[in-house]
Image 1 (cartoon, rainbow, N blue to C red):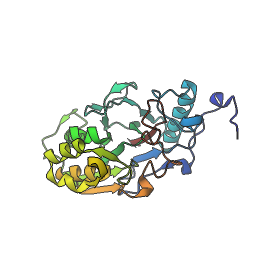
Image 2 (image 1 turned 180 degrees about the vertical axis):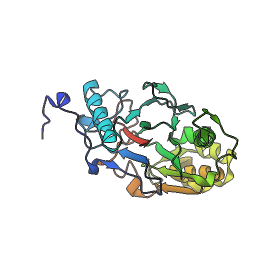
Image 3 (image 1 turned 90 degrees about the vertical axis):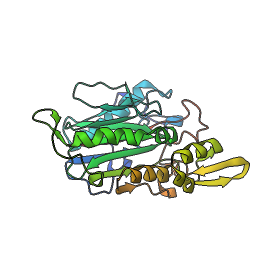
Image 4 (image 1 turned 120 degrees about the vertical axis):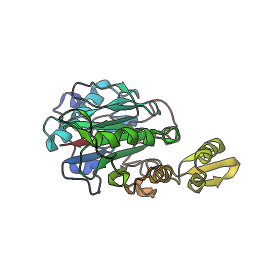
Amino acid sequence: MPQNPHCYRAAALSLSEGDCLRPDWPAPAKVHALCSTRTGGVSRAAFASMNLGDHVGDAPEAVQTNRQRLQATLAQVTPGARPVFLQQVHGTQVVELVPDLADGVCADAALTAHTGLACTVMVADCLPVLITDRAGRAVAAAHAGWRGLLGGVLEAVLARFCPLALMDKASDAIGSRAPLDPAEVLVWLGPCIGPQAFEVGAEVRAAFCATDPQAAACFVPQAGNRFLADLPGLARQRLAALGVQSVFGNDGSDAWCTVAQSSRFFSHRLAGGRAGGTGRMAACIWIG
């Protein structure tokens, strides 16, 4: 059905419950999280319909409306809450969100202990990783493709997260308590390209195995010296090595695969890997 040509100027309604994923994990009640899907927005064609990426060639007014809808969804839970969008580069840079921080900081992970600031990462095959602790003292989000995982984005964000979760807010300084036990950390893995669809070269497998021989279990040989890689499996290995025991969400099954579930999720690879070939989803976590 053709869309209303004036839809971009319509009121920015919030997403319906069916248009986003909400983690099933034992986070405290004050910690809120969601991952958008490709439905519930106003974008068209390859970006239909809830594209949140402003760098993929979509109509700017459509992206703005979609982002307003996402913010309205957050604000329904926590009045005044807003997603803070990063400029992601498949790296390991981590930024701490503070109230006056604008969108566009170059980083692939964010963390905060401030209320109403949603750590937000955009994905369309890469793995979104949401983090909190059992007391809900801080939250974090990381954008973890294979380059980020290999480079250490999870190690980098947890190195910042554990001290932040124990910050003495009265003095704005690290307290004298022992570092946060990684066993207190909760992690949720969102949708990404699944191990049945993510084909990589031998050099990718070799790079992971050079840092951890156990990574070999996450690669299945294919013809032509190619391999199917288990991205959520590699993330779970990295988290386990860091002492994180409570990991929820993506188990590598087709239900979580952005390629297998292309009517629900955006997939950059399925779109041919072209710049601007598809939209972007967002995973958000915030304290309310």
